[in-house]
Length: 212
Image 1: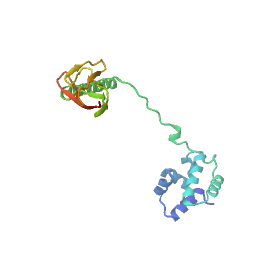
Image 2 (image 1 turned 90 degrees about the horizontal axis):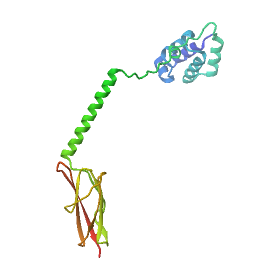
Image 3 (image 1 turned 90 degrees about the vertical axis):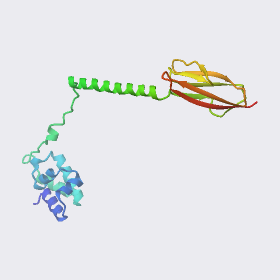
Image 4 (image 1 turned 180 degrees about the horizontal axis):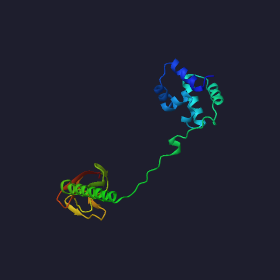
């Protein structure tokens, strides 16, 4: 009587499939397919896995999975073919544990110092070359009002000096400022400027329309 492995091999060869193609289609390793076709059950994992291999292999070839399994059960005898426990089942992959060594600790310190150094250089470059940060939240540009005064508010770098229409205003520790400006004309231009310690200046202008 032909074995389940022989039936699978004959059908595979009849349809001109290679073991490499079967491996790719069924995700069963080639060495296991070879052992299955040869009936070398000692080279295969436990019976439950082998039955799964036969079902997948038979399904791909268009064979009756129930008949293949029935043939396999008749021919298989655990006393004659004790299943082999694969290394992957017997010796699970050991999880690598992170170990802090003196070399790794020193490397981490050096890396941290390098990062701090470049951050410092970036801050100094921004401080020396770029103007200070400046944001005006009120009033919006082209603001319309019927009030003879408008409140100018915003924020900048805490170290910067803020002037509104060339008049210096106070800045709190978080860089926020607020100042009321009187409107004398129908159209008023308000210039807000922030000056850094290095002399760099950032300016924002707002136009306010006074409706009388």
